[in-house]
Image (cartoon, rainbow over all chains, first blue to last red):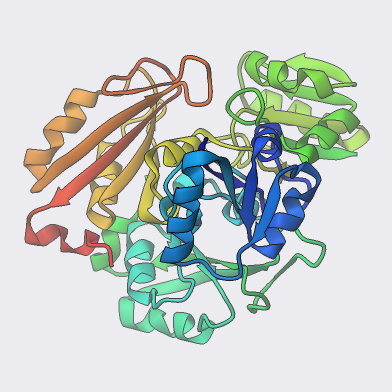
Amino acid sequence: MGVMIVGVGPAEGYLTDRAKEIISRADVVFGSRRALKLAEPYIKGKRVEMTRFDKNEVEKIAKMGVEMRVVVLSTGDPMVSGLGSLVDGRVEPGISSVQLALARLKVDLCEVVVVDAHARESYDEIIKAARFRKKVLILADKRFNLEKLKGLEELEGMDIKRIVVLNNLGMENEEVGDSIKSDLAVIYLEMDVTDENAEGSQQR
Amino acid sequence: MGVMIVGVGPAEGYLTDRAKEIISRADVVFGSRRALKLAEPYIKGKRVEMTRFDKNEVEKIAKMGVEMRVVVLSTGDPMVSGLGSLVDGRVEPGISSVQLALARLKVDLCEVVVVDAHARESYDEIIKAARFRKKVLILADKRFNLEKLKGLEELEGMDIKRIVVLNNLGMENEEVGDSIKSDLAVIYLEMDVTDENAEGSQQR
């Protein structure tokens, strides 16, 4: 009985043995089409494809969890802009696109700030993040305005040293470049700090 | 040919299929005793146990990589206070203790700042992190001074709302409590911001 939220990774080959086992023991498995496909070989119970995710869905899952072993799949890691904080239940981690981005860039998680820019304005947060640490990872989709981001530098007394856009991380069409080509894009922003106000962002 | 740095996760059961395959193809596998044990079932080449990790080791690995397929194992994820930024070569991610901590706490990575406090003074960075975001994850060992951390609140005009210490994450002796019992501890610090200076840390 109970609900578990399980990370399936960003693409094929990233499932852990623990995740596979939890999935295979579930009576019901909820997930997006993409998440269900990644978990497919290990699902033995009933599949429920989620086309949207709202309060009704959360309540339905909680109710089912009282009588059955319910798994909710989350692409990537449930605690990286994922379902882990939205659904009640124990979380089993998965590899996230943030980890793949850091791997490609060879930058440590302890040197960056991760900002979620999916479906919301996040420029203020990005500026504050860049003042605290010069390296920022932005989780973005096609609606994110890269030109606006580049324009922010003058306003804030900081210079942009480097912008890298990582598209479709872990997939066959993975592409590291300078434009957003996917709703699963990660933008790496590295700043040079040039004015006094931004002193707090210096890393030791 | 070449060098790959592969994350083996924090404990048994966290290896991905991709990591297993890379490990099984290696001619030589470098790793700490703990990392080698986690990867053991998949190693077909020569094992080299690393008791320390320095410049000589890095050069040795690079030289071997010219003629052989070399894997360097990293417990957790190579890009979370790991070997990924120290060794030349492609990085394959693994599940980190940061992910397990966030899973237990049900807090999203995009809400926190991760600070590495292993073997160095990090209180200034923790204060700045808490001012930017109210939630901070600190990677710590037994030498970390939890009392000093608690004392910082008066100095900085912020109140500590919650401190949780997560010890031995993913292992049989995992323990969530209020004291550091392991050199692989993660401390979660959540602040209430009470003065004006700290306004920048308000989350939207």
